[in-house]
Length: 296
Image (cartoon, rainbow, N blue to C red; front, top):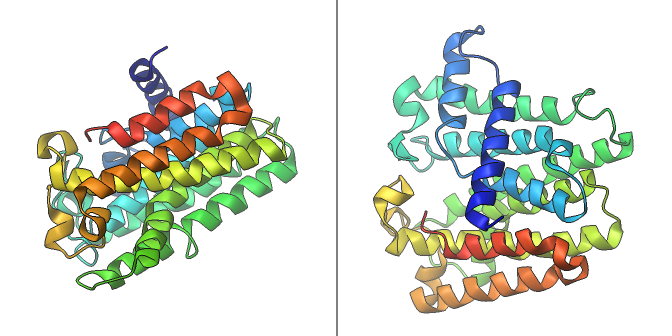
């Protein structure tokens, strides 16, 4: 299966699972559940869930072992986008080619939709039926890991430093902190959860973690580059918004050519980290290349 087919197949799996886990639009309170579903089913790439599935499969597992956790991760990612688009943060009008959540449902409902998605994600991670064949210690470890990478020492912390850095000259370590935490955190969590639920041993988890750290940072470097040279129709959001807001980015710090070199270097590091897993990690290798070379 080539990478395009793999992405389409696993994305469809995730979408079907999300339909099972998400409350329906007619479930009270309707406005809240409609707002949640509006953003969850807005056509995202499902990259984090797919990386989780691929990590599990690279260890001999199958998608069914991680689909509940993959849905939880997509809900956490979606909540972060809803909040990121709010007027108090990036004040964006469009996401994935259509109006942002607060533009459709109002700021208050958008905030609550994000809150509900985050909370629902942890309910799913702890669901007894979904975890019926998972050792309890592994369930606890997964929940702790996701909470750590999503919280103040992960994604949320990276977002705070990103906001505090707008319009300022910052050093390179601060830039890497923002990128590895705000964006890289959930990608790193995704592959580790996939490995844990796939029954990985300590050395396999370590290899997957090295992969996730490099791939997560590569994703954001590529995102920075796309904000400069990308096509707005493909991206589904405004191009050039990072520069307009004075955001800390790799092209701003290093220039476009060197930023691309850094993305390629990180891709190589991610692929090399998978060497202990052998041929079973080929899809993860292809996903690393996709992360760097994608056009949206």
